[in-house]
Length: 244
Image: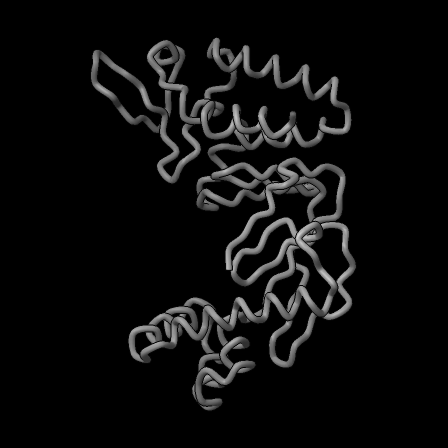
């Protein structure tokens, strides 16, 4: 199950806890009896990467196993929600084996072999169509882009999202920040990384003599030829729309 509650796309100054299922695949398999216990015990002993690969092979070897496992994930999330009296107003998002809960105490986190553990705690969240930004006291996590690409954007779109969320307590200040940012963005006056496309490639897209080039780094000489539309369409403008 993958679900994001975008009824309130900008969440400020809240307690958002990410509750993850520990050893999700094997614990779901054990709870719902999706494989013989001997096999499950053997899988438990494997390192995480090897365990996930072994479970992946079961999808190919055992007809219907993949569907049963996904049903198990969906069902345990529903059990978790029901046991803790969670409504959609309390849920920020669901990511298959994790539930992001807002301002709601969890009274039951164990269901036999299935245990939900608090993995991360955040203060703010920005929920856009393609990306989700979660800001904690000392961290920013993003859903919608590979983790290894995040460092490339820390001084660009991630800093932008963080600034928006941390100034959201004051509408006038937020409004001023967004207007100033949009003007500077369009004038290409911001840090280069603000224009690095927030995608799996994380490149700068430049038109050089009519030929579109994808560059890992740029200098001032490329700024005028830089295509700045992607981040504007997919992050800057949606953020503006989310705040009003």
